[in-house]
Image 1 (cartoon, rainbow, N blue to C red):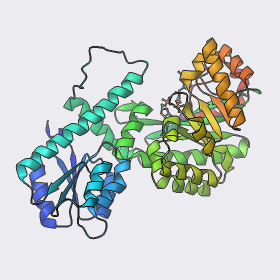
Image 2: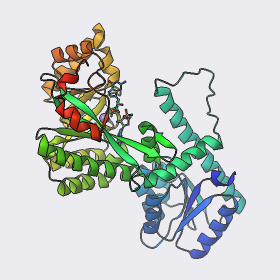
Image 3: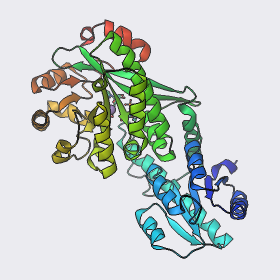
Image 4: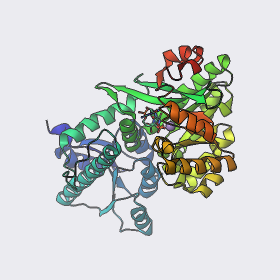
Length: 421
Ligand code: G
Ligand code: G
Ligand code: MN
């Protein structure tokens, strides 16, 4: 069935006649159609479903097309946005085109043949960008074999794209349908070897079985469902933390957020809401921000980090060493903890690696940053990091991420007993 393969279009126009004829034209092309008469209605649709291409009017009551597209663009990096307008290109439209909020501008009345060809081309570009990104993701995956013969331009198949489309749809309801779960990886104090906390890691059981988190998270970042996942993670983590603090008063929990969350308006609100609903010692909640985005700090991201910090929660730079962080940026942002990336951790056993890591830990000391070492897998590594003065250790040497039901027995075992065993 080729039908479901063609993609989803959202038509935004305040004139019912325009919506009708565009919908008729595009439905014939096999696309799934949503339509909205205003920016507000369109935003609602985007929150509920995955939309590949938006065909948007400029002049509408309420928010204009360019205002609307500029608002949503950061949340949907892979969507294609086309503006259809009865007016000649204005400065406003030119600016939206320059910023990437609008990919293409077309005059009304449109020519059916040209419009159909443009939509097909937009859809092809969207597939290429998604598939390219997945290839990059796979290239970073240690289990992927490096094939020098693979073509420079990926061979996009409808089948693989479609499988993602189904997952993409399902992801929108994952949070409300009970398909999400958290696992918790123990974090151990480097000196006392007592468990000091956990990192909450998201798991998704799709109707086709479990999906790898890096895969579904990048999918969620592209289809606009990341806000729902993040909200669920925040609520669930705060609920757990609040319960655990009754039993283990010093316990800490870290959760991960996406760069898209940091650039959006909802994150601070979600955290504020969750800590209001769940009585907890706020500083024990740690929000992990991946290094690559913390460092390309746009104004919005910085404002979000500062607002989060003002709420009293702590912030960690995740995966440090995997990107290229400038130390001055580190110092100027309200971070409390630096998490050393696994790719660096393993290098502690080489002479050069040890030197680099020693410098990083010294720098953290100077900046009053605590350090969590990720991916510690052996006693040798543990001992080296103890000598180097790391604060916290996380890794398979102690434990992989564990289910909620195993947290209690982990804590009762005293954690230290498990080391080496
Ligand atoms: O747990 P695992 O190693 O498979 O996780 C893979 C990646 O997914 C890690 O980089 C981790 O940071 C990320 N990840 C896990 N849970 C979450 C989450 O709740 N939100 C976000 N944004 N990323 C997560
Ligand atoms: O990017 P982030 O730090 O959030 O990723 C955490 C993930 O890293 C966990 O989900 C876990 O699966 C993985 N991980 C944790 N400890 C180790 C380890 O010691 N070795 C390896 N190979 N992976 C680990
Ligand atoms: Mn993390």
